[in-house]
Length: 109
Image: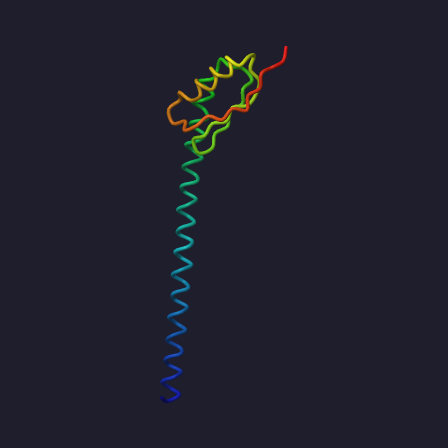
């Protein structure tokens, strides 16, 4: 093989490798952007769900509500275990809630 043909093939291989790297980088960036859109949508959904749960618990003063991926966490103090159970049930009844985690404590008198 002549040197000219060898150099031509090496240049073609280098150009192909560079173009494949560019395609791969573009695909990774596109995937990352799509993932960010999913995260934003989930965050928006959680925010709306959090508002609905807070409205359902309006009678329970002083309770904290946080929501992540449809899982609601309740924090704060309740007067007794029955009040805590009712708050958990009210939060669970909200459409879209996947699970309720309780970090509620019974206040000491």
